[in-house]
Amino acid sequence: MPIVPQPLPRELAPGLHWLGDCQLVEHEGEILHSYNSLYLVCGEESSLLVEAGFPEDHRVVVNQLETLLADAPPLRHIWLTHEETPHAGNIGRLLEHFPAATARGDIHDYHLYFPELEDRFEPLETGDSIDLGNREFVAVQAEIRDLITTQWGFDSGARALFPGDGFAYAHHHSADQCGHVVEEVEQLDLAAQSALFAHYALHWMRFVDMRPYLERLERLIDEREVAIACPTHGLPITDPRAVLPKIGAGLLSLQASATSS
Amino acid sequence: MGSPGDKVVELFDGGPLAFCNPYPVDGRVSWHAAGARGWAPMNSYLLAGTETAVLIDPGLSIHREDVLEQVRGALNGRELVPLLLRQGEFDSICNVAPLVDRFGVRRIYGEFPDAFLWADVVTDPELFASALDAGLENLQLRPGETLEIEGYGGLEALPATLRLLNTLWLFDARSGTLFTSDSFSYLVSDEATGPWVLDAGEEDRTTVAAVAEHLVTTRYWWLRGADVGPIRDWLRDVFASREVNAIAPAFGRIVRGSEAVARHLELLDGAIARLGSEQSGPVADRRFERA
Picture 1 (cartoon, rainbow over the protein chains, first blue to last red):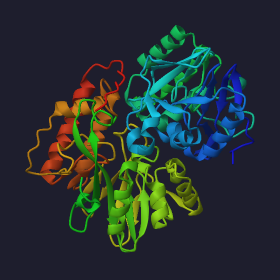
Picture 2: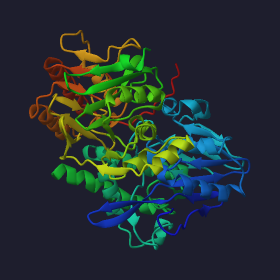
Picture 3: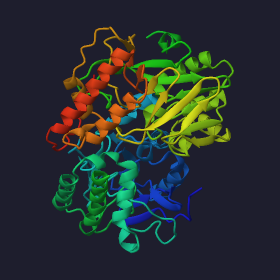
């Protein structure tokens, strides 16, 4: 069952749909939500799913997909940012459920996890693209990552960036925040939530100067003219240039607190 | 590559059993350097007490039948309790549902209190349903806590300062075995039959440079130019405050014997120090290399 009355799927832009469910996280007595989002990109000829989602969300995701695909080109591609189970946990089940789909991205290791599905995984190198009809999906360098095999993605149709664990932050256990883009949720302290997520999930940031990473991220947003950022663990962002400084402040505060402790 | 039993190593008398199930290191595995070649073990460890047996990291799908047989051969009527060191990573969890199904698992330990929800990745719908029906109790093992295995001893959970993703290290004081998760994972064998344990006195040509190359081209790409002082301090303290007789990584050859343990501590510490002193730069993507 969904965690809250399910506001998803939601169409963020023509042919770009947001799917998934919230995951409850308890922090210092407060219930936070962290999305394990997926996104469906629909071209004129085929559709592509960004991420395979968290294992627990399998039934929710399949229901959402079947609803959307009833009026969209067939699902041919499931692109994964990386192989952690909140991102790729359902890949085996989705490949079984959608026999015409192929898993794309950096496909190291999957032959060890899903040997029976090895021929359903096809590499997509950074810089390569998939033509969906009237739009292209491109694998781009992941400026913020955990696993070295991480990729980010970019959709030319909506100028949407799929940054995986980039722009990651929780939101509050409240119907007013679930299912919204971040610009619709004024009371969310992005810097604090970004720092909190990094504290728990991006351990390496404590030891590294994050400024060059943030600078490269800003350049990527400018070069690609990113109109919307669709993270896996944060509410989507329709003004990424305005939001990036807040996210950056959170990440830099994590580094500062690690240095001072 | 031998029978399941051929890949079981008793690390010490009465101590952990290691199920060392090999996979090819051929450029397709991201936790080995792209140019590394040979064979490495994916290690599951069984600590058997009077009534329960704790299995650390149930391992890969390609080894499912071997792991099931290895557990069967060692369980002797005990309750099987899986303990997931990296519950968000496939290499730690692939066989959880098959183990639940085969051995009637009722309790699972993970770093978070919902381990099975992260680990339920099987495509077999019957296994999925079976596991859900099992009424599993998801238990949390927090850093600083000790899991008591009656009739065996305590398994200490250490916070891992050297880590990429969420994980724990574990220390078995009875045998002096330090379970280091994804660290100390660089040793491979030339042959599919092993050996899977590097004992003191064996030829060992591992260098600081090789360990550094392993780290920076795999999970520890971020160490170059990083503030590594806290990591090195923590690492040395772990070994200084415990009598470590074996280093037992999740993958890669196991290091056994105090001399070998001391040497590999110096190698890893030296590699971290070297990387920390280098200038950081953009992280290159891995390139696909097929066998």
